[in-house]
Structures are given as C-alpha cells and as structure tokens.
Figure 1 (tube, helix red, strand yellow):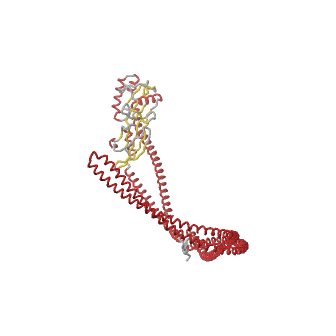
Figure 2 (cartoon, helix red, strand yellow):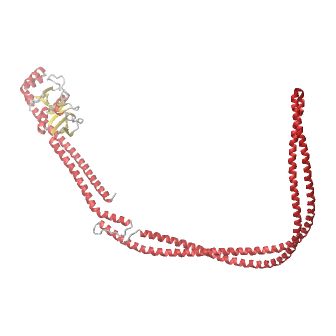
Length: 621
C-alpha cells in the first residue's frame, strides 16, 4: 500500500475516530442533559403537585370553621350522643355540602374513638392522622389511603369546647380537584395510578391505553418520551407520598410533545446528515490534499525506481522548500555522487579487466611452459633412470653372459659327444626298424589267411542255419513227436546266428588290424627314412657345434669388454639422474607457483568481469 493511501486512510480513520468520540461525548452529554432534564421535570412536577394539593387543602381548611364552630355538633360530641351527632352532621352537610370541602367526614371523640358516619372502623390513615392532630392539638393534613385503598386528601383538626379538647374531625376529599388543578398549571394530562398500573383519577384513562408506558417501582421517578404514530408525548412519573413518607401511588403527567419531538428529530437528522456531509467533505478534502501533497513524492518514487533499475541519468525536481524538497535535493546530490563513482568504476573496471586478462594469459603461458618443462624433465629423468637401469642390467647380463658362454662351451663339448653317440644309436635303430617292418608285413599276411578261414566258418554257419530251419519245419510237421527236435533245431539255429555275428565282429577286427598293420608299415618306413636323415643331420650338427664353439670363445672376449663399458655407463647415469631429480624438484615448485598464479589470475579475471557486469548495470548517459 502506498504512503498516500496509508496516510489518507489514517487521516480518514482519525477523522472517523474523532467523529465517533465526539458523537459518544455528545451522546453522553445528551444523556446527562436528559438525566438533568428528567430530574428538573420530575422536581417541577413534584412542586406543581405540591402546589395543587396545597390549593386543595386550603379549600378544605376553609370548611374547618363551619364544623369547629357548630354548637349542636359539639354538644352531641360532648354528650357522646351518636344519634344527635348524626342529625347535627346531616344538618351541617345540608348547609355546606355543596361547597366541596370534603367528600366524607370522620368524627372522633376525645378518646380517639369514631363517633359518626356509620363506619365502625375508620381507615388506618384517617385514624392515624386524627391521633396526630389530637396529640398535637393542631390541624394536620396529608395524603392517605381511603377505605378502598385509593389515595385521598385528608385534613384533621381538633374540636374544642371552652378551650377543652372534646374530639377530632377529619375531612376526606378525592384528589381529582388537585389533578385538575395540576393539569391547568402544567398544561398536561395528569392521572394517578397504583403500583400495579390501576388508574384512580385524571383524564379519560382510555386515552393513554395506546401508550406503552412502563411505570417504575413505587417511590421511583421517571421521565421519558412516548411515541404513537406521528404523535409524541413527554411523560413524567413522580411518587405520591403518604402520611408515613412512603409512596402510595404514581402521579403521571403526560404532555403532548409532538412539535418539540418532531423538531428534535429534524434537528437530529440535520445534525447527522451535517456530520456525514462534513466527514465526506473532510475525507474528499484530505484525499485531494494528500494527493496534491504527495504527488512530488510519487514522482520521486518513480525516479528512485528508475534509479534502482540502473538508470543514473535521472534527476529529481528540486524546487520545493518543504521536507519533500529537502528529500529531493538530498536524492539529487546522492545520484550525482553515485553517477561520478560509477563513471570512475566503469573506467577502472575496464582497465582492471584488461590487466587481469593480460595477467591471466601470461600466467597461463607460464603454466603451460612449466608444465612442458616438467613433462620433458620427467621424461628425461625417466629416460636417464631407464638408461641407468639398462646399464646396470647390461652389466649384469654381460657378467652372466660371460659365465653363460663358458658354460655353453662346456655344453657344446658335451653335446658333440652326445650327438656322436646318438648317430650310432640312430644307425642301429634304422636296422631294427627294417626288421620290424618285415614282422608287421608278415602279420598282415597272416591276417589275410584268418579272413579266408572266417569265410569258411561263415559258410558253415549259413548251412547250419538252413539245416536248423529245415529241422524246425520238419519238427512242426511231426507235431508233438518232433517238439523236442524243434527245440534243438532252434538252439542250433540261434548258435548259427551268433556264430555269424561273431564272424562279422572278427572281420571288423581283422579289417581294422589290416589297416593298422598297413599304417604301421608306412610309419616304420617313414621312421626308417627319418632315422637315416637324422644320422646325416647329426653329422652336420657336429660340424656346426665345432664352429659355434669357436664363435662362443670370441663372444666371451667381447662380453668382458662390454661389461667394463656398462659399469662406467651406469656410474655416469647415476650422476645424471641426481642432477635431473634436482631439476625436477625445481620444476615442480615452479609449476605449483605457476598454478597458484594462474588461479589468482583467473579469480582476478572473474572478479573484474563481475565488476564490469555490475557496473554496466548502471546507465550513466
């Protein structure tokens, strides 16, 4: 999210929070104001109610003298004559009853016992107020409960005769007159209600059935606004306090507040829409202001993005005097310095790359030359080593050759003697081979004679087989008498067959013997010829051995000379090998140093290439 959006959202959020806080504060203030108004309204209603009840009590007190000065009533009370008291009261009521001083009159004697009006027992609040007036010998007034437990106005005063207390009288009057008076004073609808919601006095109760007014507990106050349709009412509920200071009923004052309520609703709507309009205008104003204020910053962000992409040819607008202008000036200064640094880096990286390439080529050439030198030195070392080894081997071989030639001379002499003896043996062998050839040829002739004998035996076996067959036929003709003869004939026939088979096998053997004999004769003749050739060859070999013996003697002399030269060559090869080994060690050390230099040159070349690539990322122009 961009800074403009973030700051705008933050400003709008702060504005909304401030508006919400102001709304909450206004609501709390309004709530406190409403509570204060409710207190004032309930206090005013209480004062007006007191004023209305005071007027009622003053009207009731206006009739006190009519009762307190009635001679007949006091006489009847002094005499404790109920009938006479009733007559006096009847006469008095006829006289002042239409004045509205009371609705009901209670008379108590000096002993605080009820004396008239047909009630056996007066209501508790009436009797209590009468006792209070008698004890204090003064007029007492208050609101109490009637016999029907409804709130009524009570006024108690003492009756005297010649300054002596003879009794107490109590006026009981309904509170309707006070309610009416309160309605006139407050210009509202007023009624009384019990703790359960039962209405006692006031305007038509049905007028308030459509209002959902929830009465509080007895003794609590309430101020609220009730609405029904398009009408609105301001309701105030205050307690009606009895003689004992406890609430005995609710005094409800309802005033038409439709005009005020509608005006308040219009004011609330106007205030709400005004606040919303102000918030919208403030939001739009903040957005436009932030857009205008942060527009240079947006351009700076775009320029910095181009700078991040390697374009060092960018420039920042530096015409403002605020923090954004200072930021632009600082960024422009930074770009110019970076541009200068990158320009120097371009030049330095190019020079470094050329130097690194040249060093790498030199190092590579040195490495190749040292490797070649190392290889050649190794080959020379190997060749010298092989030469030394060969010289040593030649010396050893010549030493052994001297001994070998001497031994060869001895063996040549022994071989000459063996060849002469072998020649004599071969001559004797040729004679014996001729004799063996004659024996084998005689054996071949005898095998031919055996073949002829076998032909005779074969003919006999054939005739025997035919005779056995004829005998079998005759035996078959003879039947039972010739069965034994047939068995003999069959055996003879089988014997003839086996004889023929044996003759065939013997013929095969004789044929193989004849072939072997012929081959043996040929081999014997060939061996005889070879023996004769060997005799001739052995004669030639004896002559060659004589010549070879003379050559071996000359070779022995030459071998002695070669052994001396080989020993001298071996000593020279050892000295050359030591020198070559030293050269090889130096070449190995130089090769390692060349490899290290080549590695450093390659690393330097890589670093210079990387530096050129990184520096080339920035575009100065």
